[in-house]
Image (cartoon, rainbow, N blue to C red):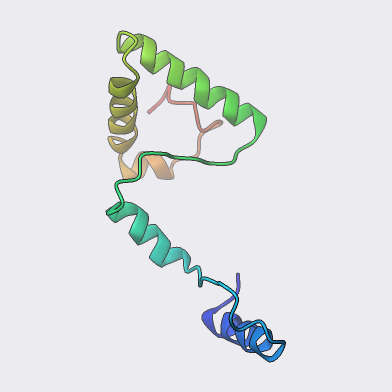
Length: 105
């Protein structure tokens, strides 16, 4: 990943080519992560890109939580979020065969 200095050099190049007035935004991963955690915009949507197997497993577990919660998707999301946050650091550091393998947690 580029550093801020790399981005600055690229911006200088773009300006030299007459593109200085174009819209642009500096993306800084740590700053963006802090912004997402603070969630001042009250965002309500989570999107992630994954592989087909994880996609299927994610939705299988989501549907399982909805069923356990009596068909209430809001309660299911809250429950699954709390379940994930209850994992200890030592549990998260232990390798598992699959991200969905919680049998020995």
